[in-house]
Length: 120
Image 1 (cartoon, rainbow, N blue to C red):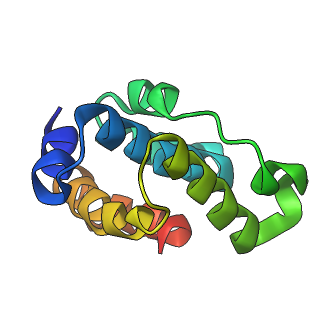
Image 2 (image 1 turned 135 degrees about the vertical axis):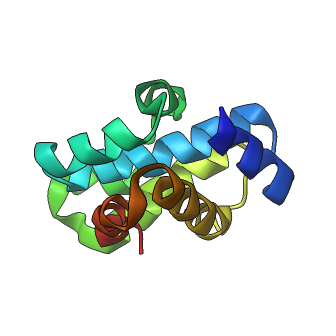
């Protein structure tokens, strides 16, 4: 998958870390976007379901507050997931521009803008 190759080459992470980290970010987008918006993103990203399924299950702070934790809960959940991949929680911010660039190349500005609502 092109996205995984981009992440591994640019960030020096393993395939498992790349797919898991991307999966965590796409899972967050899936949880935050409506079905219609996420459907557009999913149609532009080949293998997105596989990426989401490769994301480590992240319980902890983010999920303990339910859906109302907002940005703080999202960040805690991401940090927990990245830690399970043996990645520093700050790596999420390094994954995002690469994922955004990939999504733009696959689906154009409109799809990138949808994803930007939840990842920026």
